[in-house]
Length: 572
Image 1: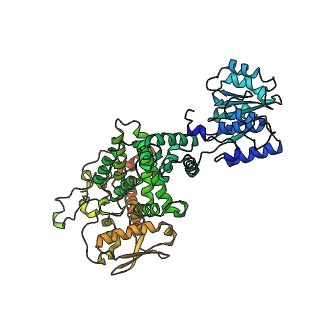
Image 2 (image 1 turned 90 degrees about the vertical axis):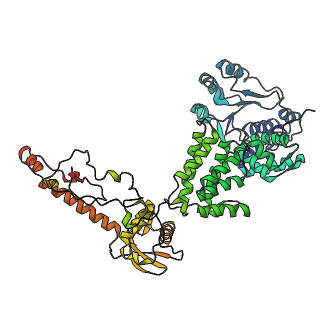
């Protein structure tokens, strides 16, 4: 006897053998037991979840020689004929190959005739959404009022393409994707019955590759058995699928956490020797990042072995939650870019390097900080370049503006740009004496935007060796999170070279001098100066007197950048 593939050999032949879909199983069994049978059923769902299988089981229940029941005997001639695909009253139609209206009419011409052997004549139309519009129109009347001896069983993977007139005439069941654990358990049962050695990790790989389809899982299992020689080890399945071990995936994320581009590319080179499917590897990284995010928020939601929990916990501690979310989005975008890239490996490497390029600066290790050094006061002009755009601060600006008379006087030059080293967390600064002026210290800590915004609303309440207490307005207390406090504390430790430094932030009612208040006051003074300069400008006054021009004060904006101190030029 020729070999029968596992997907056919292990196809369920009764509702008791059905894997998954308990909601469909329960509804159909209750309907059969109560003799409340609909004349048309529609089964929808992705490939390989049991649409045709359930339809055949239902046909067997309707035509079993022992009577209509939810438990067909499976031994009578009708049951055996349905299992073997030779039952004359079960008419299976592939709608994808019979889309024309003529085919549908030919099919319906035989509806009026009684079944030859069975109790019911059952029409099983697979991929029914492939029928043409005229075919659906021809089917409507019969589908609504079929003869009592006829049942229609329709199956489709795309119910959105069915006319609403067809949907309203059918009892619809939506079949769900198989959960990976369900697939693993069924594959384990099949291999136990077949007497084939296997690794549970291999079954997990097959279940994830099947993407919710039991038929695909059994087909992949057949391929794995042939590939490995009548056994199913994890290494062989990994080679067959072109996937990589979880150890490699964890290593990639570890290198990302270390911001070690060299080690990252070396790990990719090791992967390339296995000739993997880089799109699949990227999908595995996306799945791993998802598990890390869940571990950070709801650790108990994951069903993991102790080893997996330890490894995921280490990554969850090393990567900030917002960094994990950023990497997840970059990896998702990388999957779409992979198809357009000339070389999949290059696109994969670029995706990982993009994660490093957009990595937050205050991630927690020195490699994430801008590598700049400290410049002595006497050498400000040497060895340090101003920030991008600052070198043009003293050049004339080509903007249309109303130049007030006050601009004729010598314009005060903007302060010389600070060297780049001033914004980096550089060498130790000694004790906490610099905290006397928190506003002056803040720009030198090299904080990210969110942490800097929090610190700008704080003021020093007290400080002593190894301890700093900051106050923040009680109305802004929601800005303080454990993560932002830890990042600010980490920057202070690096700045003062004091790993024992502890930071506490308290919500207070009293107002105090903070960098944010200073900045707001400076903006108010600059705005007032701009308004006064425009009002006193002779040109503006002449326009008002002769032409009746009206000054819209809400549109006044100082021309200078916020960091500059002069107010010689103003604009409207």
